[in-house]
Length: 144
View (tube, rainbow, N blue to C red):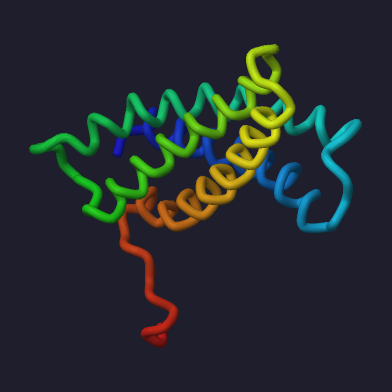
């Protein structure tokens, strides 16, 4: 794996970590919707995540094509696609409510879509992390 692919993946993970900490973390603590500094941190990390996700799409596509070495396994490829699709859904569902195109019901649906897709994205990134090292994840149920 080349350094551009690793760097873009690390940047995506860092952006996703800030987004998860500010988004899911506030929600898990039972606080009201994001406000003040937490919202500002969430919005500041979003462009970093978006740019890094685009870079991951470009750099990892070459790693996943036929004939490239080393190639990630099938599970890593599926998780990569889940990350890319969920990332796009998260970005669009975060930006579209800011336009006057949707009423209150549509904005609520986009908010819920943003939250659910963000949770799926965070889980997919955590499951995909071992692909960065080139090793499959260990099965904790198998006893080390």
